[in-house]
Image 1 (cartoon, helix red, strand yellow):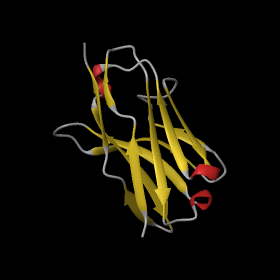
Image 2: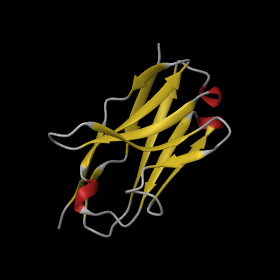
Image 3: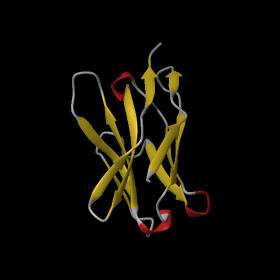
Length: 115
């Protein structure tokens, strides 16, 4: 079965950086678009960034120029490098795999930006 396991969340001060990782299993990773989404308390889950099988990237306007999504197909891993974090980035971050129209999700990793 498809499994996505995120790691790398935590508490960081405003202006700091974090790098999230998501390891996928149960799929031919290199064939599919991978993404990161986030959900703040009381809000809907929103797109952060996606990366296609051809490494084309797409970002939410609020994170463009601060976050970078990348993938390592040899390690079945997608990354999210987050720089210049601010309190509005506080949320649970979820890894997503879109496999032939079916969305799969990880369990999420908490990112808290606070002084």
